[in-house]
Length: 266
Image (cartoon, rainbow, N blue to C red; front, side, top):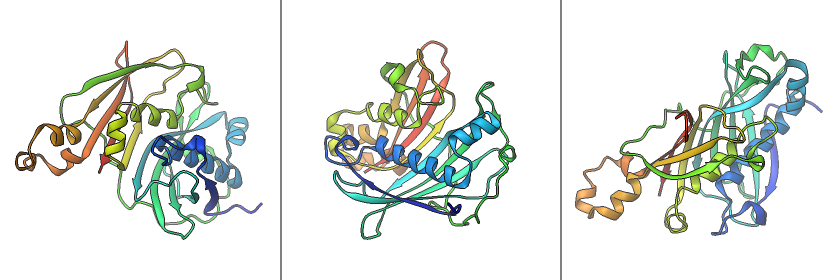
């Protein structure tokens, strides 16, 4: 099969990918991104098995930014597109677009990946993988740089999670989509019914493995400002504060930070 600059795949939002409100779960969206990334990497000649056998490395997502126009509905048919841009010294950027059957853009995303030495658990340079790439596209799905998620107020402990067998992927660590489930579990059913996610940015900082316990903390001025303050006072709060929810995961014993995330709600 000829290596393609852009890879497209149709998906059907099935029962198991949907939430209580009959929308595609955010974690399922991340699974779609992971699935099509793997398929396109194989098409290019740098799939999971290939780079493991030839270079003893694995693909690891380290950052992602997702903008959501509309989350697909249960039983809806969608198309996901992905393409990389030219690699940097240590990073590979991969872009995503999700469309409905009429071609309307539902979701846009950019992600940053690295290759990690399987034995040493260290990041290797992109030049280690030498293949003849198809022509790179210059267009990016979201034309902006990712910032660094950070809280704007006091963090509060939400819950703790012991990482077990069912949480671990083929790389031996907690999968990027599992983090999304745990992030969304920081909020009540009522919160999920009242608010929707407009965008999310996640920075994956350290690996979590089976046996680790993650403490999840949140900073929710976006929710608290609406619940505590009358509207005239709430206008004194910066717009970004009112719309942004911050969640991070920290090792319950050593304090090592696993991830930081920033979610814009509406």
